[in-house]
Image 1 (cartoon, one colour):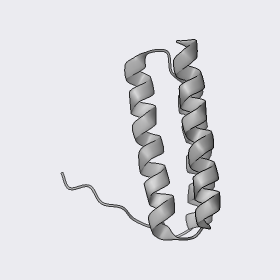
Image 2 (cartoon, one colour; image 1 turned 30 degrees about the horizontal axis):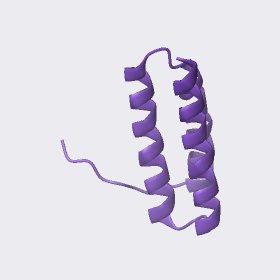
Image 3 (cartoon, one colour; image 1 turned 30 degrees about the vertical axis):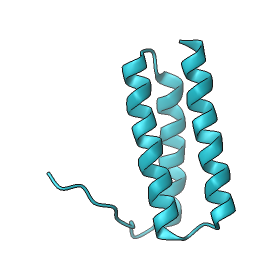
Length: 78
């Protein structure tokens, strides 16, 4: 299967709902493997934000830092 990045028709709505879903996934992680999958979601989300250029670079960086902080805090709780 080929993987590719895309820009949904309603990008703003998509990015907001994706961010909410990622936060819920991180909170629901109970194993390291599950957390690794959540990290992959974060990686892809940040890459999509950066490539689509709908958000300023500093905002993408802030979102990225916050998501990776959430991942690290959850990892420390496991």
